[in-house]
Amino acid sequence: MTTHPSAPSAQPGRADGLTVAIDIGGTKIAGALVHPDGAMTGTTRRPTPRGTDAEGVVAAVAEVLADLARDPLWPSVVRCGVGSAGPVDTSRGTVSPVNIGAWRDFPVLDRVSAELAAHGARIPAVLAGDGVAMTAAEHWLGAARGHADALCMVVSTGVGGGLILNNRLHPGPTGNAGHIGHISVAFDGEPCVCGSRGCVESIASGTAIARWALAQGWTPTAGQDATAAGVAAAARTGDPVAVAAFDRAGRALAAAIAATATLVETGITVIGGGVAASGDTLFEPIRRHLASYATLSFVRGLKVVPASLGTDAGLIGAAAAATMLLGGPAGGPTA
Ligand SMILES: [Zn+2]
Figure 1 (spheres, protein in one colour):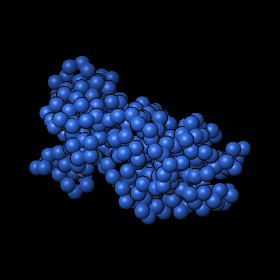
Figure 2 (spheres, rainbow, N blue to C red):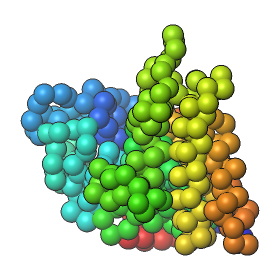
Figure 3 (cartoon, rainbow, N blue to C red):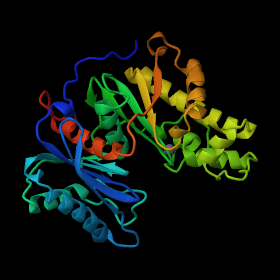
Figure 4 (cartoon, rainbow, N blue to C red):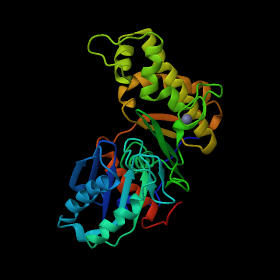
C-alpha cells in the first residue's frame, strides 16, 4: 500500500570516488566535487551570462570546471553529473533551457565531456533535467530516502518532477519521465503553454496561482508582492480569494499526485520549490483534496511531504543522478 524502507540497489553513498557535479540554471552555474557521503568540496559558481551567445554560456561552465580541476582532490573524480534547467533531451545530451535563450538543442554533455578531458578527467558524464536531479537528491539524502517508489516534484514558476521506481531513478528515454506539470487534470481546461489543456502547471505553478488570484480580484496589500508568495501571505491572513487560489492549486496537485500513485504505486510524494515553501498553505489543501482522488485501497495511505534539501539540492541531485544512472556498486544504467 504505502512505501516501505528497503535496501537501495544503487545508492550514491555506497560508490567510491568523487563525482563532479554541475548545476546549470537560469541565474547561476554551480559546481562541486561531491563525496560518497554527500559532502561537497570546492563549491564554486558563476552567474549565468546574459546577452551572450551559446559559447559565452559555455565559457562560464568551463570556468566552473577549471575551478574544480584546481582542487587537490580532482584526481579522485570518477564520474560527472550535469543537472540542467529544461527542456532536456538526455538521449542526445542536449538542453534548451527556457531561461537560457542562447542554448537551443545545445550539446551540453559533449561540451562538458570535452572540458573534463582537457583537465585530464576522461570520465563518464550524464545529463539530468532539474526535476529528475531533485528527485535523485531527495531519494539519496532527503525526504524520499528509504522509499522504493516515490514521486518528487518542484512547484515553482513551473511544475516539474521525477520518479523513483523500485529504488531506481526512472528518467525515461529522453530524461523527461515524471513531467507531472503537463499532466492534464482539467480536460476542458484552459490552453497550456505546452499545447495541451488544463495542465497541472497551468493551475498550480506560482505563476498560475498569482495570475488566477489577480484575475479574481485579489490585490496585494502593503508588503505583499503580486506573486504566489504574496498570495500565500494573503491566504494566511484569511483573504478568501487567496485561500481559493491555493485551494485550486492544491486540488490540481492532488488529482495529479493521486493519478501518478494509482498508475505506478508511488507511496510518497515529496514537494519542493518556491511555492512549496509556503508550507501548510499549500500542503493542507493538497492533503484534503487527496481524499477525493486517492480512493483505491492501495493509494489511501499516500503521503505528501515537503522536500528536505535546500539550496544545494541541484548539485547533490546532479551527483546522485550520475551515480544512480551510471550504476553504483549494484547496478547499471536504468534508462
Ligand atoms: Zn501543459
